[in-house]
Image 1 (cartoon, rainbow, N blue to C red):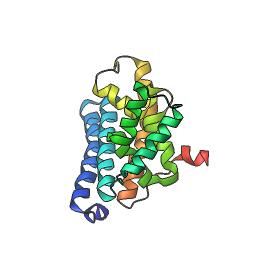
Image 2: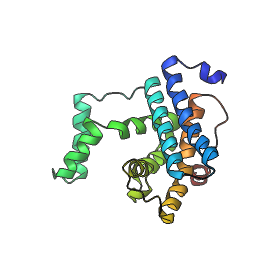
Image 3: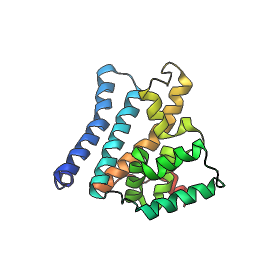
Image 4: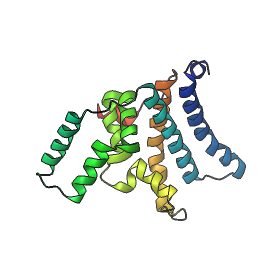
Length: 190
């Protein structure tokens, strides 16, 4: 508690909001005596977004200069064999011009985890199977694309939930000093 109170007011507000989203689904468990993985996942994702905002307040992402933007676009163009396709334009816009939430979250993960960040960025946004990406699961829940009556869908979501849980609790540990959990998946890969 003292660690949270020591934070600057604008950062404390984001951390408090993240804690709310971690607690709220558990209250619903107690009220209805049943597991609602969709609600829990949404709550954890909301907590993640709050923590991303807090990290970006503490250390905003540097804005690339025009020359740096040109270099980034040239690299993307080289990776695309010099072909300016619709996909290339979309990728250049999302990665260079307006990285949006993915850019903010990737920056926050890099700030919090340095070498481990690539693993978490992959888990959130870059897994080969889109339906296993933490961000895409969140989008599917929010847009009603997950069949909550399908046990296989719920098992897939339940299998991914511990990864999101690990990320947010480790982010909490970076913002508010406490013994955050160790990530056995990352430790296993080292």
